[in-house]
Length: 452
Image (tube, rainbow, N blue to C red; front, top):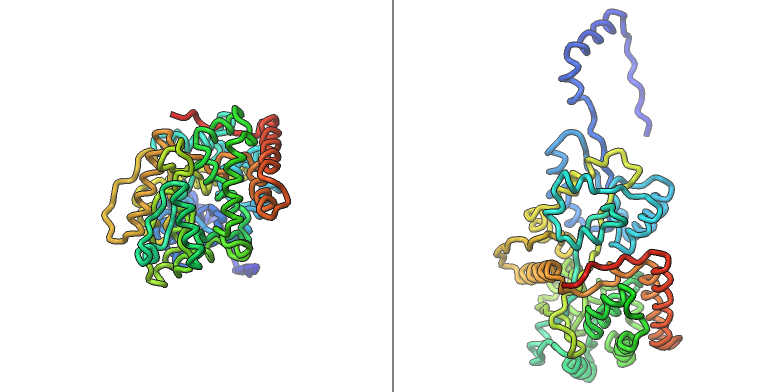
């Protein structure tokens, strides 16, 4: 809506008087009259409680702390990635760019749509605050382009109420996993809840698990460095294992395609399913699932699927990157917002409402905070575990973080072709390798940091 113009009669005297006043008091008046510059941040979806927490713990304190900038967060929902692609391609879009991690960030790097953050990292001391690997993963050709907002790992979530009733124990090996899953099937219980409705990316969550926990993080590292092809026998065996589980009905068969991840997790909370191989993002679903059914959630490490693989494996994933639009006029303000996120107190407060979404990759694990909430304590334990794994170099590799974009995309759809018997595990592995090798030739593969 256009604002109506204000009309008044001005005499030459009033204009001269006004000019004189401005000359005398201009230096003190201007700061109070100047409107703060807006920093626009497009976010994904969030519940009303989550939005309120972000307003309380970030937006309001930031805006109150200074008068130069005003942070405004817009919630764009699941369409955000595509909206960003279109907007940034046209030199538009938000000032703060939130991507779904390195595989997505790379799409903007190649078109020079994001700012180099090195100067801000020096000014605000980010290289001392954040884990080195997180900074390395956000660096392209010597330019720090993105900061990891959310580190993730994967774990075995299970219905502890059901396990107690049945006297079951969470599995630690492949043999224990398959024996328990077969027992569940005979009892009419779905072994693993999972779903990809509207979330095809969920497919490669499962692939990442078998690659890391069957092939080993060392094998994955060699493949990412180009030293081992993705169609090597050990990787084909991993896909065969996942396909065998699919054929047995461990993931619910075709029901997998009708549920999204949130909905499938709700099934776990009813006791109609026993386990879920999920990421730390699942903690945010607990209030709407287990809290409502009053059943108890158990969490442990994913099972060791081959004897040569270490236990436990903490897969390192970056669920979201933060960057600054190259077209912004408020780069300094954006950096100030980023710096405000790098605070243990902020993460602790946000995690009480929005667990799994604000796991900043600190160089040191946050100080332990006593909490009567068992789920929050488990989440904190996982955060500490992945931080220790990051710093020691003993971590697994999440596809959405370490795989290049086209290879990551092929994983999402290609594994469905295996499940639907359109191609074999070997054919899938061949095509995956061809895609990866082509991206490597094009210089699109980011070599992971050396393992310790």
